[in-house]
Length: 515
Image 1 (cartoon, rainbow, N blue to C red):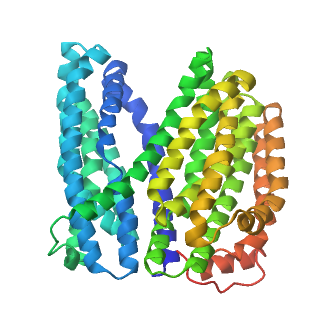
Image 2 (image 1 turned 90 degrees about the horizontal axis):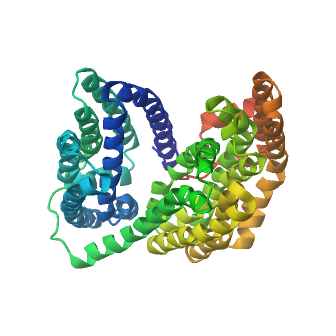
Image 3 (image 1 turned 120 degrees about the vertical axis):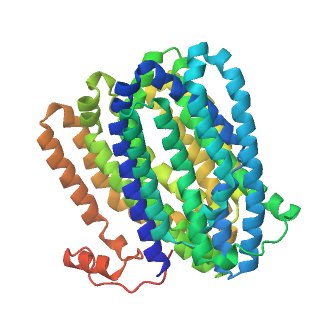
């Protein structure tokens, strides 16, 4: 099976899993409130969120380990894979103990912070202990999840992900109806933590037994390499968390707390669309890591990275067209027109989908190709600088200052830094990126995106059916405008035949192997 096929299968499972998770959230929240009541459920969410900070003891090693294993697999270096697994298991075991210790400390100080009564502590103690202990015990097994991911056993890994989501849904529903209260949520959380690790450990024992035997003794050098690589991921996650968590604080700090739900509701559809856009290109990152391990040279890496960036832009442009067209109507029908933040905010949020996707593609590729610590530091710097910038711009432009700050900081930090990090390893330059990737896309995308923005501007004054029809027309215009780019993507023969039948490409191209 080619890397292209594996990436497509992984992305397909990712989309299905994402959809199931959204459906589960829509189903479970009202049912949980019905069976538990608002106060117990609120206490669970608050304490679980605080205890979630215990996960910060993980320096990000499990996030980057699949890439490192994929690089070793690209070199056909089984000894390096066993070495990474042995040292990764040691780091994971230490993280598990650290997680449990931090969770215990937080639980001891939690009652005072949240003003919990003795009854509240009795209600929460057992369920939280179940979730925390299961996480600690299964943490070392996560190296096998990393192994299955790094070896691109995509069908098994995707199936496990679906079982994880469906099992969590079923457990919660059955245990809630049986009257087990918060233990339903705790056992479902334990299931989600344990099932992928245990299943992947079993899979590795069956399919690659040679990789889980005769592990070498842990090495300080390898542990240090894992920690430094993982630290970049930790910095990056902290930077993204800083940005995500600071929006409400920025709005409140300027004295307008009533704007918080307005921004949250207006930005919801764009945030969901951005995550959907990233799923497919990110499915190729493991293949990119394998190519890097094969030492295929900068020219080949540039070809692959540019292809992934084109895919980011193609999908982000389509998402921007749809979001710009329907978001005003969506927010108005979902929570009411008073919670729509206005056309300026709405337009900037739509444009942010495109720039965020481009910078994410650059930084993700740079991280895979060895610049993990630097990428993490850049992401953290971007988050740190974005907060004061947002404070200034929100005072001037209102809510539109939040996405404006994100756009400015991306242009000032993430975009140039991503190009600079990719230049030595993949020969990516600003001029080459603009002339070869961004400009050809932008020239053809400007009219469909503008039409989507115009549709959104009139959407509250016309029938929803007209909005739906115009949105479909805008989407069709975008798909037709992007015709020259489809032949540049590593699509399989079946997809190429479909594109030929719709006259989106003139003939089925013969493309090189891509991740």
